[in-house]
Image (tube, rainbow, N blue to C red; front, side, top):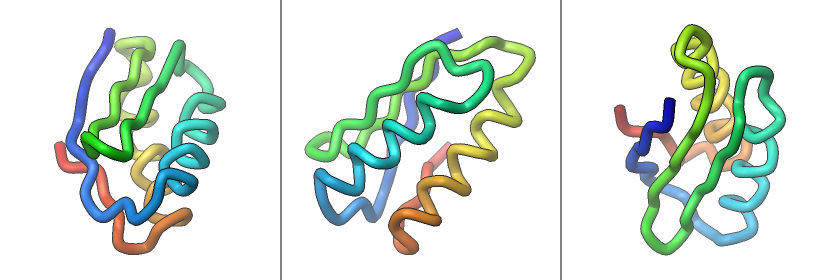
Length: 72
């Protein structure tokens, strides 16, 4: 299942790239893209794991940039 979310507070393209790379490595994630310009995160992942993946992604985003968050 592919879902798209708004991401707020991402300050630089480098941070967005780090977030994308780490979220892509999560178990169950097929693909991930984060657009710094559009402030948009798209995750393609297994349906049954989506809630855990989203929670882990939120933690990754906050760890890389404290002011950033995924808006559900």
